[in-house]
Image (cartoon, rainbow, N blue to C red):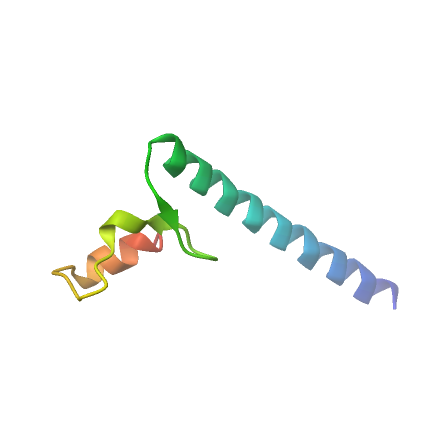
Length: 66
């Protein structure tokens, strides 16, 4: 039981760290005057074309930090 509690606490701490990283990225982009969009993965909304556009797979992966 104690091990399970420790595992859950570790998972919660990891999720909190990831959320803090996303918030920091969003704030950095907004500080540059960029409109930020996205839920879990923050990205520059001006780089997205809802009608397709001419982006490559590399552009897509860059948008998600991969």
